[in-house]
Image (cartoon, rainbow, N blue to C red; front, side, top):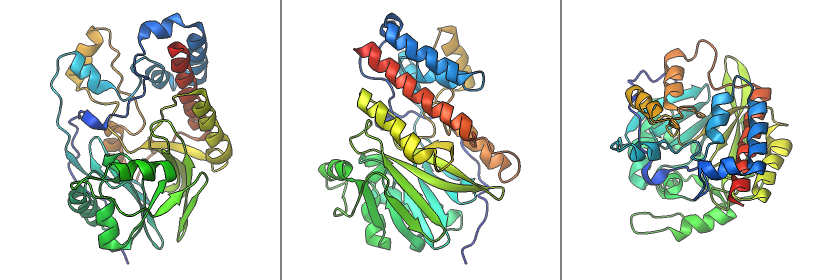
Length: 352
């Protein structure tokens, strides 16, 4: 039987630069002036703010800003601040069956099922898969020999880089969408080995292992075959449904419509009420002092995101007791999802 314990570790609060791993939300060339000048864009912004109410207002303002969420590293650069190096953090048991393992700016997820492990993403390289991901599994009492599947959210190296090690060492099956298999394999270099094409994911694909089924949806935008992973998670004896986004960019009206379809046809029927991403620190890149300095320059200085480092720290300190800060509830999750689509539509309208 697998050993289970809570990782009692110092969790670094130092925030990170995203560097080449940026999960940018704003279309290139978009400015605040273009947003303000477009009547159609402002109609979408107003709709987002109505959906936000009081409890999601800051998130809506961030999502609908020209810089978008995930761009605080650029704020640091514009203010002449030096980047903060990325660093490994201790694993975090986010839910009873879900662990985050990796760095302060990018990581992988481990889903603990009754018959083994499903991983989401694999870090940057075979060395990171071995020394960070596998070591992290062992740190929280999970056996890497139990790895059965590795679902890769999209084909960029910081998500697919460790798959060869996991396949060769543990026999894990690797899953990507068709377009992102092509993307991942096109990036192969001597220092970035790629496994042979394995399982090709299509929209609605289900991965079942023991008592757990992960449902996959294709959400093009960040890449042509970016996935959203819908995962049952447990907290306090209750089952919730997390959507792990591997990218939320929407670069055309058709992609906005696709995000809506994913919610209407997949996420909502499954009771989605938790939003997660593999890039946890994107919206928390400023220290308290830097945040005050940024506000003095009229920002934007967003510190609100999905699973920020501060929120993950709160989970480490409070888990398993108390309310869970990432459980939004189905209504609030639905509003957050709709806000993302309205803000994406606003940016598209402004760019037209």
